[in-house]
Length: 109
Length: 115
Image (cartoon, one colour):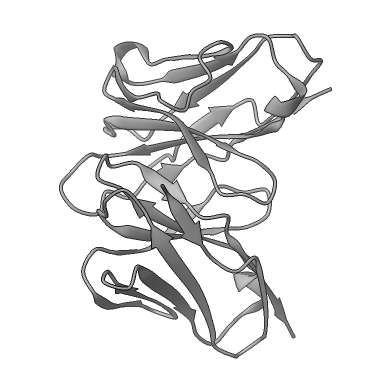
């Protein structure tokens, strides 16, 4: 079966660092994506990992361990505008994206 | 460059009525996706097109949902008749199918409310 788990909600303080975890069990693995979605808006692409290791892009980094079926998204120097849902999605062997339920992050001053 | 365009943005209909959504993908993107997103959930794929061909429609409820992508560009998604449980946001996305990380670009979605 297909299963992607991520925490439902997280809170953090402006300027802090937060790590959002994602574990997955899918029919094959062909890459993992992180998307950001503000309330009432479309998901926007943040990062893509297909090989093990850390991908850094500005304040955002994403890590992947294929053997553990595990990824995390790291957000540094949090800003109020980072309050959003963060969606973990795995591309399976049919090239289909399977999304988790998303983690709603609230950043407080 | 224009992003994925969807219309309408909002639609309220009574149950048993038909409804249609339209999507114009990013120019040059050969792959188009329709997703449904329920409140507090991630998007779920309904159908995927590569050019004009529907290559994955396994999760499309074919008794009431239909889709088409004539000429491999614009696409429409139709529900007839709508049910209360169809209330959701319907997202269209497009990508350029290449080896590697072909990210999907999402449109703003159509928020459907069935009363």
